[in-house]
Image (cartoon, rainbow, N blue to C red; front, side, top):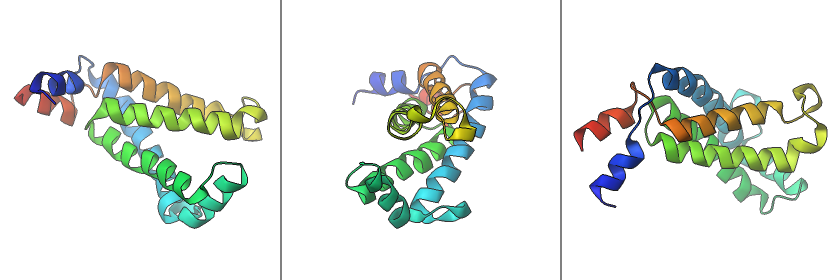
Length: 147
């Protein structure tokens, strides 16, 4: 990849608002990914999450759990750091679309009914970060200024 393409990927004109969005969204994603991958915070780990995913038709369940958990966990870390913000946000957005369509949409909007409001909020935040980048206090900003 050319230096100019990398610089474009990392560039951001966003200010501190991106930091305010990135950090809490990233922390939430890290926690949810850790539930799926490691069974932390009351999660079921890869085995349990994989079985559940297979039960709703996402096959092979273990692989789907690994992919969703990795997208959330590692994507969340990237967002907290503001490192490769746009690609991380894209992966998270895709993961949220899958969650909405496969799990939450049929339950309506509200989270109290296992609806899609929470995943929709994370989708909106990740799309905003994908568009604006990591902001002035991000690893992306530091890296792009060195290219």
